[in-house]
Every structure is written in structure tokens, then in C-alpha cells.
Image (cartoon, rainbow, N blue to C red; front, side, top):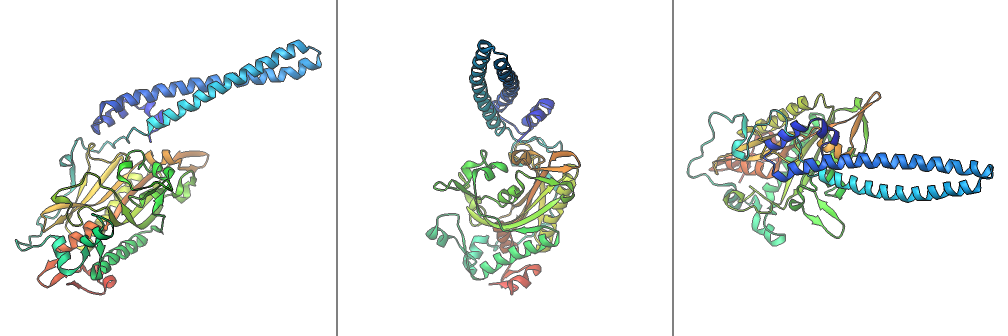
Length: 425
């Protein structure tokens, strides 16, 4: 979340950022409420400090007055101490309530977009940062969408997933399961080669963890909730992995911290329907490799570009045609300052499929998590970044569609040492 002092010192910038995000009027009202609550907090803190100082003064007088035999004056001081204790308790209760309200209001304000974020409201307003290839694959009218290829070669089974769980939970089988595992191992090996520490995190997190990265309260309706234990199934490995350093002060020499994790991801995707959610286009459970960096503020945008090139290299090695978008203010995630989306061309569906988002959150997540670094005597909030490297469901869909041939699906060369076969048929 944003810091109150930042909002106060940069009010016009914050207002402009909310406008770029196409924020609703109530958020602008919330911003004014935050500043008023902060004024109230400061006033109550001052009153509390003054009342405590006065109580301490009267307490110190009691012993001296008793030694002087001034029992009546001592009793008056005792009465003042008792009265001040009641007043302090009232002030501190009001202060606690004000601080809680302030925090809850701050949770409602999204991150401020980076200056390079384009103005816009819908995905159509996103900027093409790096265009796709000049010539896109043309497979002809006989090309099959990935769900038909999957049925033909028994790659995955959506109907079996419905039987076992429900819609949106695919079951991978045979060579399809091996292809999925091959992609996981390939992406993890590439991340390790780039210096990322591999993490195997829990697949469920508590409220503090979900709140730390911004899933709560913004994306609560999109997460699966385990009510009996008050836990949430993770929508991405970003959530547990970034929280590893919550409430810590990191030495500057340790930065940047680079971590990667493979996990299944769980998303309710409420309200998703239509032809564009067929097959693996949108599912409730999918595998993903995430890369996360915790960085010095002066280096985070340089690191963002490095992460961008890491994802681009993966897609190039897989031989998949892709493009990169810079998301506009209205299409960007709640916690992000700048996001790039990677889209792979689906040759059979003849449309672009998002397979990765790479984002810089600046201090928005680290402020929630109290994640800081020490440079000498100076202590500052770190910047956090993450990216999908990559989300497998649509990568599998793209491989099936773009690499289909009369003999079967041609496996990308970089995956063959993992699959043990070069043709899926």
C-alpha cells in the first residue's frame, strides 16, 4: 500500500495516478478520508503523549509530597493520576480505532502507475511494446484448436476433470503429462541458470500472507478459501515466495534476492464464459513457474527489463511467436506500478493468448509486508518484482496448435531431452 507521508507529499501525483487508472469517484473521497484520519491520528498521538507526561509528573510528585507530610496534596496528585489514566485509556482506544480505520482505507488505494504507463481503460488501449513477428503462422482451414488435438492424442481430459472435481480442472495423461512435466523442468532449469534460488512453498497461505502481496482485500472473490482453517489456496507462487522476507530488514549486500518456484495455481475466475475460455484458455487450476526479485529501489527498473528478457528468451527457445504489451492504466493490476504482458499467437484460434505478466510493484507490497533493507544507518523499503516464467496451460495450448502436423504435434527441440520423444501422437 502507499505510505501516508507519500500521499501527503505527492497528492497531485497520486490524484493523477488514480485518474490514469480510471478510478471511481469514491476512491478520490477515500484519499481525502485518509488524510483526515492521519490528521486525527497525529492529534490523538500528541494528546496521548502530553497526558502521559502529565501523569508521570503527578506520579513523581506523590512520593515527594508524602515525605514532606503533605498528605492532602499527595491525595490530590493521586486523584489527578487516576483521572489521567482514564483519559489516556479513552484517547488510546480512539487512537487505536483511528489507526485501524486508516490502515483499512489505505488498503483501498491502488498503486500509482509509473510515468511510462499509457492512458487507457480497456485491453484494447494497451501499448504494443514489442510487436510479434512480421509473418504469423498460417495453418490453413484444416488446423485444429488445441482441445480437439488433445482429444485426438489423449493429451488432457477436460471431461474427466469435471467428473473428479468440476469444470476448469484438466487431467493430463500419458505424453501430455510428460509434456507438462518437461515444461516445468525446462523453465526451472532456465531460472536456475539465471541465478534464481528454487523454492517449494506451501500451496495455502494465511490472511497476513495474502494481504502482504495485495490479494486481500482486492482479489478475495478470485481465491479459493478453506473456511475451516481460514486459509487461501494460492493464485500464484508470488504470494508465498514474496512473503518469505516479510517483517525483515535485509542487508543491502544481499540485494537483489532472486527466487523461483513451481506450483499449481488456483483461481476461481468468476464470471468467465464464452468461446474464449474453451480448452486450456481459462482454467481454475494450472501449473506455473514464477520468478520473484527483491531489489534496491535504484535498480528495480533495470531488473524489470532483465526479467522481461528472461521470459522472451524462454519463448524464443520454444519457437513460439509472441509479442509484448505495456498495460494501460485501466487494465493494470491493483498493486502494480508497471506491467508487461507476453502474448503467444494461437495459430488455430487466430488470436493472441496471454502467457506471462512481468511487473514492478515498487514499494507497494513491501510497505504492506514491512520488508526493508539496511544501507549503513539508512533503512528503506525494498522494491518487489515478479513474473510468470511461464504459465503452462496456454503454453501447452500454443505448442499443440502451432506445432501440429499430419503426423502429430512436433515437440520443441529444447524439450526433447525432458520428454524423451520428439512427436506427440
